[in-house]
Every structure is written in C-alpha cells, then in structure tokens.
Length: 334
Image 1 (tube, rainbow, N blue to C red):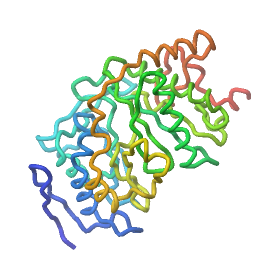
Image 2 (image 1 turned 180 degrees about the vertical axis):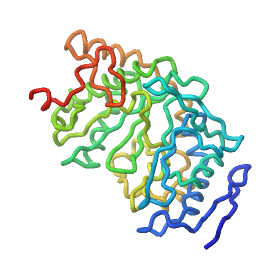
Image 3 (image 1 turned 90 degrees about the horizontal axis):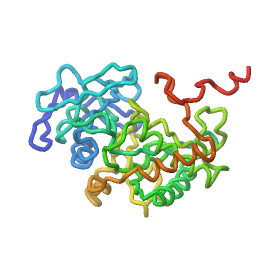
C-alpha cells in the first residue's frame, strides 16, 4: 500500500497520506479517489465555499468507521488557509477554515473530510447571511419525486416574492434551493423570511407540504426545514460527497433538469465527467443579491392577519423572544 502521494491542485502540491485506504467499500473508492474528485470539481466547490467558515464532516476511516464534525480549524492548518470567527447561539465562538483556493478542499479531504458544511456568511461579515437556504426534506411515506414537485412549486413562491433560487440534490432523498441575498439582514430575519416562504408553500399544497417542527405532526409530507437557516445550522454544500455506501454527491441542477434528474445519477464516479461537460451550473449565483423585503412583509402579514408568529427553534438554541413553547405536542397534552 502506498504511504503517500502528491497531487498538484491549483498552484499548490497537496500531500495525500495512505491514499489506498478504502473509504467506500461497496464501490471500492479510496481516499485518493475522494481527493482526486475534489480536485476535478475544484473551481465549482471553491465558488461554493470561498471565504465561508466551514465545518468539516470527517470520516478518517471511511464511511463504515467513526465520524465527527470539526468546527474549529485543525491545529495543523497551513498558513495559506485563512479562518473566520463564528459565534454559536451559546455565545461561544470558533475559528473555522475559510477556503480561498481549491487546494484547501483537497487538503481537508486528506483529513477524511467527505462533506463540507459552509455557513451562509463570509468571513468578513459573519453576522449577516448572504444566502437564504430552503431544505425540502421528505418524511416517511414520501420520496424524492415529492420533493421535486415541492421544489417546482417553491420556484413559483420565490418568484412571487421577487426572489430566484438555485436547486441542487441533497445527495439523499431531498432537494435544496439556495437564494443569494444581500448581506443586510440578521440570522433571525433570514429565518423569519424562510418561515414565511415555507408557510406560503404550505398554504398552496397543505396536503403535501408541512412546516410542522414536531415529527408527530408532519404526516406523509415534505417538511420545509426552516430551522436550517438558524444560526449554527448548515447544509451540505454543492459537490460534497455524502457518507452513504454508494458515494453520492450533492449535485447542482438547472431548473430544467429538476423534473427528470434523480439523485442516483450523481456520485463520485459520474460527477467529474458531468462537471467537465457542463461546468459549474450555479456559477452565476454570485452575480445576484436579492432582497428579503417582500418575504419579511409576508411574515408580518401572517402575524398580523393570521396570528402566525415564530416557530420552535432547534433544541440546542437558547429560548428566543416570541418563540412558542418548545415541547412536543403529545407531551404538552399530558
């Protein structure tokens, strides 16, 4: 077994230790395959991660071994990879890596990072998100086709609010839609906008879409996970490898592709050829910065006319002003 190899990624040489270590036994993919994959899509994933504080989801022994999320920058971080300081809901902080060149992604992959979880902010201003992220999460009894239908309806809701989204597969059963926004609003305001969008989507298809935070209330519907916009909540980025046996990746899509594409089309083996053929389908995202005024107006109208205020935060967040009781409905009744 080779002990190490050196790969040229951009303008740097990245050393890959134990390159023959098998990371995906079902497919036979090795650590070297993962690093080479990230080098092949380097410009695309760098566009996604550039200057964003990024949490690393590491599987140093492969997908069948133990894993962990690394929020703080590794101690052996090269001096050419900058960091950004983010603050957690608890008030504590961490300095996370902020890739600025493709080699940073390959370097992290050598540590066993399969999936990259960037914050929706840049290191120069970590208090004002520049992306509104919508997570369409199929619940038991539903599947990817249901998420596709919801995504196409979501597109119409966004357009009605003067917004446009860029869709991608999650790498699992769901879909993500990202909206680039001007970095003028707080995490709380961006989350409020996500709730307004989710409720409007739910109003249009209540039999298929839900905003219910508690699983016991969701039913067989697509859950619009508004809490993915809460502080310290991140979504696996486009091009990330997902830790599943068949080595799927989160694939950027055009809206024309959404009705027919399926997650199984995109994996560690197929994505490099697709990327070489079509390039980064979301390359134009950074040229847009939409405003949330209409979404926030909708949120205010929901509260004023329908009494629809805030929704529960994740359990690790401190209690927020205006938040309803954070207790499971069946327990509350008892």
